[in-house]
Length: 280
Image (cartoon, rainbow, N blue to C red; front, side, top):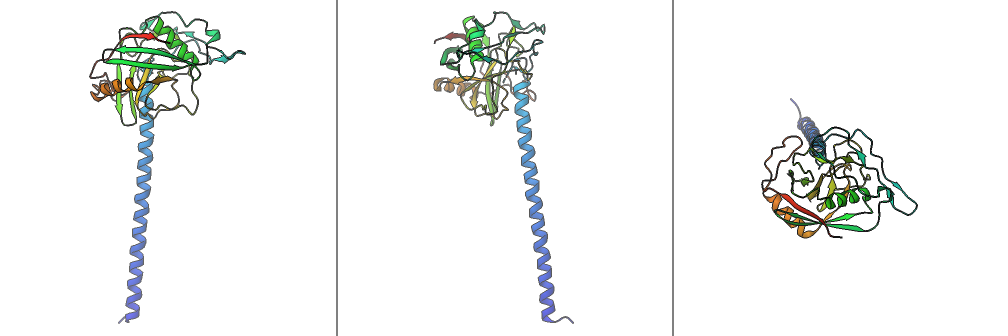
């Protein structure tokens, strides 16, 4: 018959084994939670990339942007800096045969594109006015192209064809005169990005097809801090009054017609760019 000491020792061993089993279960739960969180984060990033580049030619070029638009057959070289501080932008012809492209020429004097100061555009929409400030220092080629297209009335009468309403990705995409997500000008140019490029609320970014040098006319206005890879040129910012207009449009949501890929859909409140005017 076991003594009291032996019974205590046996009880202590059982307790130790129970504690070890509990610790092992806790470690497994923490490991599973970490794996699950990592998987979710990866899926969110992949989903955001699809949303931006899976939209159409230029769409957020459908691309945030239209990524579903065809990439140009001619390469678009990155801008080179001149001795006077200007840059030489290359606007390469899009020879894909895309029938949704509109020819309005290319920006004037691309060989001496300004890199200082800002430009101001007034985007008058069916839901209110949105003032856009273009940053020539950060994105000189995109700013010059945006201004040129506005001067050619390229955007006038065009619908903002796509909206995404996500917790980590909220944008309104515009800039395609055809409203299909496949349209743009007859030229493309290189992205102006760095590894530090981010997409906070208020940013204006250029969509692309996902291929290098495929930026065109489509752009997206960011109304929710968005987690995107640094592949889309940030050309400027939206003013506070414009963000209030975007918030009202966003509150109505979208029709989900582009789910699951690229994501989002047409705004439930139709948005048409009535005019895009160069103010300064």
